[in-house]
Length: 437
Ligand code: UDX
Image (cartoon, rainbow, N blue to C red; front, side, top):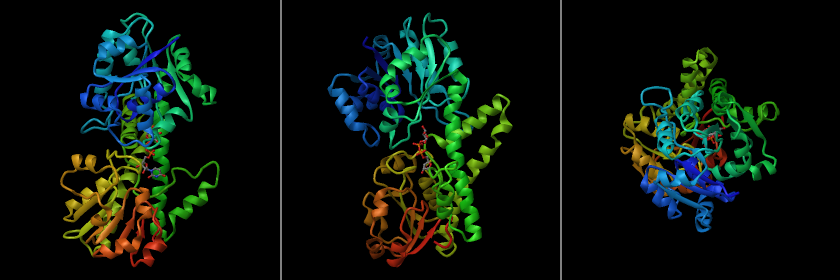
């Protein structure tokens, strides 16, 4: 039986999901309310930077399995399984998630759903949302809802979609599990664990996983604070504790902390939702996780001020990186941009370099100066801050940087540069959590 899927929302999650489901052999129609995104995707151009996605998009467009449209009536009528992949950003002025895009998507597909259709939520939502959606669709006979959270990382989105660690499916009816087993059959055949749960468990799995990851990063950044006070080295500490298989080495990279469109807003929305359902106390530790994370940004500015003789005012500072992490052009809640903005507000002249994220950064922080050429960005600088660990910066020759800089001071806020090489080229090297490195 040939199955047609619709995917509503074509951001990082939806565009990747649509292309990867086509790669699995399904006929897929991607939907969005933004015509320019649809035009770009139909032309084979991914409207954001995601390594490895362009060829999957292009080959499936060429094979005729994949198309994108703004026409909800046509797409939803043609498909029988509909994946909701729209954004759930933080509400302005509050911690809770803004669900307006989710409900708008449900309302947009509702008039075109048919008996036997399955609506599958993939967006990250507060627990209880799947039930609200099922209630909203209850008057259409034979339509079922399932919840299938996504765990993809930006920069590895294709790999994480086609080779996930696990598949989680929350169901409340007879068809959800069967239909999703059919969709993911090749992955299940590859040995990917397939867990079937109720709605609230599936919704909570996603925010619990992201809270754990955020907590692990903030734990090591708290250790970095202690290392700074004690004269110890947090990178060696992380390596040593990471050998314990109960702890594990991953997500123990101390530095400027986490940002992006998921971890920060997910832990805040989780706290807000826990309060609403009477479990506030269980998550008060996440407030501390958030605070530790934000403190790393302020600490980096303190260190910069100290290195520059007490003030950032009138100094040129080069930020190496604007994206929230390497291999992404995403600047949502970017620690790098937050630090750049704080120093700009203290009177520094901040020049920001990034291999991919400058256009997005300039849109949200238009007052900073952006420079695409790395050596030009370093020319005349008094202080370099390594804020996003792109390989370009590890490969940068410290001697070439020294030749154009006005002051040879570098803060390695990601603990990823080679202190010996930078010192050998005449730089004073400071890192986070490594006062003696
Ligand atoms: C995250 C989750 O990893 C993913 O499973 C979920 O689906 C979406 O949220 P992503 O936002 O793409 O993915 O980024 P991730 O790779 O998790 O990194 C998040 C942030 O933590 C980045 O700013 C990164 O620089 C930072 N980080 C990560 C650290 O500071 N230290 C680490 O050891 C790891």
